[in-house]
Length: 163
Image 1 (tube, helix red, strand yellow):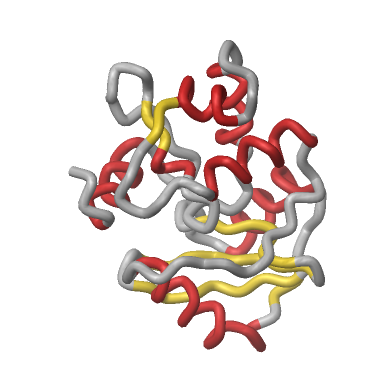
Image 2: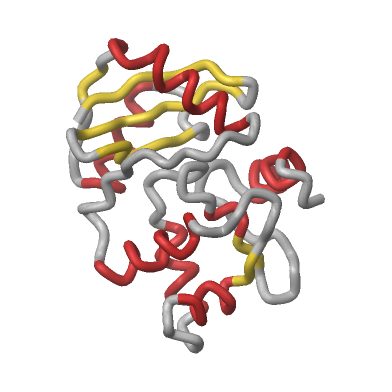
């Protein structure tokens, strides 16, 4: 696993990849060591710094922030089958739209598993690319976000025109 740090209009975003796709992403960590620790927690691997893909990844991330979809591969091999299923359903939520945890649970055929869906989203190793910020509580409130908390979640939803 390799990683780099990209400068974007949203601030610095760290991104790690494997041969199978983007495996970990975060805008919350502010040091290489903190991001490497996040990768270890999310994937069980500790990446090595490699800036060779930085321009490409920076363009991709900035494009995403400007409304371009990311259709490339993500490596979710460290997650359970249920978590991968939840994240696949989450990835299908269109930009500018939101769902509730219960709606996402119903979408994966487990209508009573809203809390389990929340747990799967909390472990999302590639927020933004799998847009878990588009999932809200049943009462329509923001809730938590694993890439910087509710303030960042609100900022992303505002960027998408939801609020």
